[in-house]
Length: 121
Image (cartoon, rainbow, N blue to C red):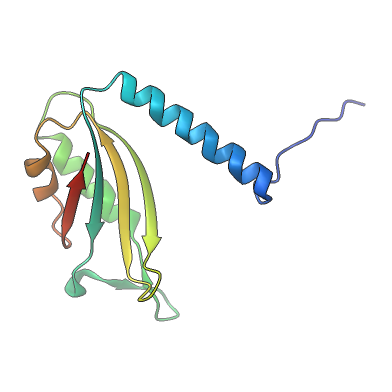
C-alpha cells in the first residue's frame, strides 16, 4: 500500500499554503503582463438577486457576461483573478478582481452595467 497525505484545505496551515500558492501565481502573471488593476464591481438595488431563503446573492453569470462584453473591446487576452464577497455589515454582494492586460480601464469598467465600479493599480 502507498499512502499519501492530502491537504484538508480547512486548517490554518492548508489555508496559508493555498494563499501563498495564489500569491506566487499572481506575482508571476504580473511579470508577464502589460498592466494590472484591482477592481471592485457592485450591484445597484435594481440588480440585486436573492436566494431561496431571501438573502442577497452573487450570480457568477453577471461577471461572465461582463467579461464577454469587455473582451470584445480589445485584441489582447484579458486574464483575471476573481473573488465574490459579501459586505461585513450589510452583507451586500460585490466582486473584487485583479485584471491583467486591460488596455483601456475606463472602457472596460463601462461594460459593468449592474452597479458601481472602482479601479486602482
